[in-house]
Image (tube, rainbow, N blue to C red; front, side, top):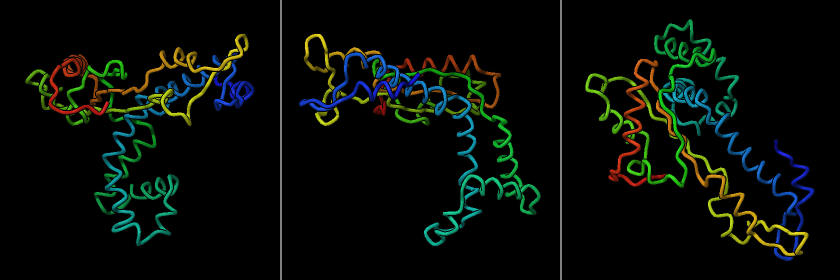
Length: 243
């Protein structure tokens, strides 16, 4: 639970800058962990990411039909294009004469009905502390290639996608920037320092990459999982990491 009133109550300014009373440390810890959980369980939830993969396949073609040409030349129309108008427009394509529009409309209908096209076959998280794991590759396509190479020969042509979602649950170096430092006031000693914060940040990963493999069905989850693990554990370093 995020207790904003408690954080505000225990936050004040000293000659060192913004300062948190020691009694508010637990509230700060819950706030930082809540941010991590929000991304992990909402924004980067497997279903959300699966729907996003599906959306990537049809969005460009859809927008090109609705707004052909440069949007800068039709700013008024582009401004009126929101989620509601977009869904209304593509819904009308279900009975269109144009085969491309009908095909796109059917795909949008699946998204609207939450019929998930891509099913998760493998998932793991990589923190900055595990940066050596998977450092050989930078983009989803690089992971896809390495996973495909490690699949049994008869499965190397199956359809699957690698999804990488990176988040920063905390500042990468909260002690380094003077303007963003948070001091902690100890009522017993009357002193302020940043040392108590080091304990909080120590248990919150500085950066997390959610690594997932999606397939059209669950028929080959075991093979995909094994290949993904092998790819991540590979010590090859042909491409610099972005983790």
